[in-house]
Length: 123
Length: 123
Image (cartoon, rainbow over all chains, first blue to last red; front, side, top):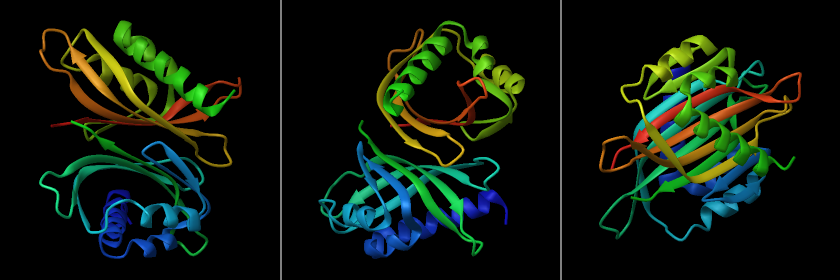
């Protein structure tokens, strides 16, 4: 699969899951996975899902502006950098965000998120 | 060295070099290094420096807003994600940018940039 197509498919899957059933994102992380969300570090699938499901908003919708990807080295990983808008229910203006995923291959031929760094870009 | 201190030192070195002598950034990349600058991919130290020095502005100044870092895996790499402002000479308003570096260790105990993804964040 072309890396750009893979990155696009991952991004679509990630944010559609985030916007519809955030708890299901746990399947995309493993025990060694790290999330830095607005500067707060969390490690491990369970803790990451706990963090994501405890964010102070319920309904939201991500819209993607840019996706960039590169191979990350001989281990077969891939870096995906996303920019976009996050619309929270009841808010007039969307928030701009940037997010970086480092995907690593699984023995089953799929990928999981090893590194995840999220930041809102304040205007 | 603490990873956060290392990331901060790298970021300060990178942008002060960018703002004072862009051609010297070549020392931070190697032949396998990749740069995606506003969606345009370039590979290898020489090509990356050629891209950076041919950008359509001369004097500029980067100001850093956030730095996040995580270990990238067993190979000893580190992911550094930066957000900040880029002020171009003669322009009234600074441009917001986001940049991701994947640093890999050298045999000499230093680091080089393996992955580099840069995007302006348009308001």
